[in-house]
Image (cartoon, rainbow, N blue to C red):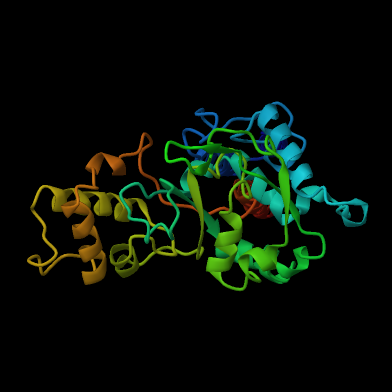
Length: 344
């Protein structure tokens, strides 16, 4: 990490001729910086490896310090984004294309915090999954969605003048004699279709409309969209009431709440909790009844709530959040060191 090395060098260079206290201040601050930067998910969704400093990325360059990407994935993101926006000379994107909100969304798969954007939905019914048959949710921060899509681009209507060139599904005849989409096919293998966003999904003023846009086939982040429901949440921690009254709250669940939810669900399965008899349950009546229905139908397996990773507080995507967070912390730490030096 170049900025961490620079801070290390500068701090100790200045303290060579100074008294011991600033030196210890440097050590303490640098230790905190190293801890914060190292605090990241253990494996990435696509590479199944720990985030690390990659060989140089070009399209998702903001993650060159620490990333879930390899250059091949970065290149694929660029190719998919270029095709999505290749809708004629008069619609060529001006300025820095990598700052486009869809470009930022495509680079979500490079964010080193990407595993902490994921919420397990495997036990939930279709209604809780907003009608999508996907096992996981990918959490998007509402302030970022609002700033980039609602305000800067006037919801989805500002994309209407040019539209997007969306991948067409590959179709085949199933056993029932009907046409069905064939899975496990690269985008644009079977052609493309022009999509006018506000006509297809609404103007994007509501979460449901924007989520319909994000979750259309082959619209959102490459290699993550097939198994993940893109879900907008407030960038705020859930209260216990929110955490235990809704299977899919629009807030961030902490480690304790995630652990409790898994424990409660398992207790329903083994019969130690019951929605109609247990009066001290933390779940609301509606959430409890919904879960009881899943349990009664035999659709729930406690193992569905097990993660390969240790449970961690949820985070939501807000475009290069880890990169900017680490730089912000370094800036604050440097300010502390400078203030300490000023007193000697």
